[in-house]
Length: 104
Image 1: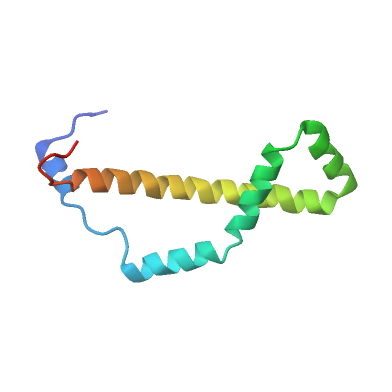
Image 2 (image 1 turned 90 degrees about the vertical axis):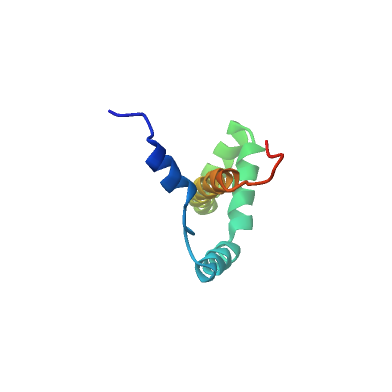
């Protein structure tokens, strides 16, 4: 496996094109804002703020609510992974394109 990057590959990477259009960006934002992200984030926070006994009790006493919470947390996890991917790509792209004189 070749792990060395050629100068040509670096130039190509530094001359990246947009990943998606402004229209697509707006659509992604609309889906995210209308996708109950706040609610499913709250499920994740609640699960972290409760003990195993508390969560077990909810699972036994309110199994439907517990299932909804579990599914919401999985959805939130996938959403958060997607956000991390976007953040990492944005970070690399903004650093590559930095042409300021005193950039770090």
